[in-house]
Length: 180
Ligand SMILES: [Zn+2]
Image 1 (spheres, rainbow, N blue to C red):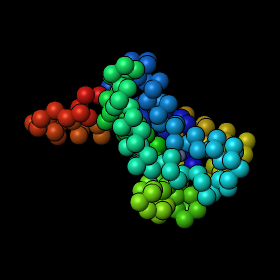
Image 2: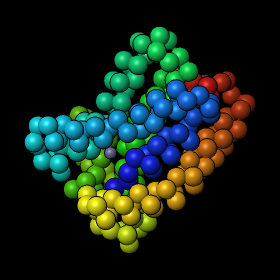
Image 3: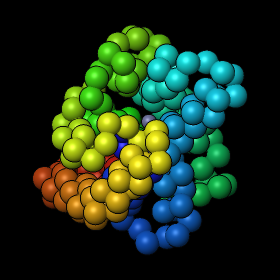
């Protein structure tokens, strides 16, 4: 149910740097899983069966991260493999919190190991009073306005969680995730 603004806000909260290239890359990764929409339209397969399947899976994210590790130094060394993976994962995580009906629209987070669709309607009460779906002009516009309002709180919440996790781990050895 969430739109690009919410996905980007959450993922960009993970980025400590002010690098425009890094922000652009992370925003792109935050939206990448929903490119399965293009395949749905191109192949003509039913949206409900195909959307939020392989492209939203941690196995798919791990595969892409492996590919990224091979080209990272040449393309964008500041985009660590940890941040690359988490930017992708943030998309599916947010989708699971915006799922009104897990059976119909839940996320296949564990595909191909499991076809179970996961979803919890944690954020749905924010959207539901506005519209049932973003797939019509009025719903899309209202969701867009809501996410403009939510953008900063979402970003700040992720920054806070990241900061607290960094502080709680300050006495341990620095990890890959501490690099961003
Ligand atoms: Zn999605």
